[in-house]
Length: 131
Image 1 (spheres, rainbow, N blue to C red):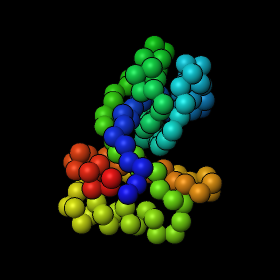
Image 2: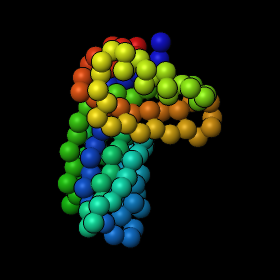
Image 3: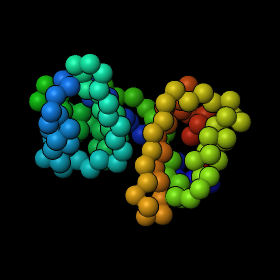
């Protein structure tokens, strides 16, 4: 039904300071790792980045090598048509399957597709529901 994958998401913890976005993304670029999805926010003196990349292990090693705390967990990614209501349909499918969403984020570049990232209480069931 949809282009759905179980992927690794990296959680990168940094200091909250000017230039950290450039350092994190520059480190990925220098390692030859493509960024597929990004969510970033700060709280007080800490920055948090949620990253889905083309090579999670390589990204993790390169970010750890420059001193960042990096953990990995499973997420479900869904590539959908970029149209009104497409995200609502995904939410309804997960809700009807009684899958609780811990968090999600997504983006569209208005090129016909949008990428949604979900971390749920049952990623395997979410993957099966959306396939």
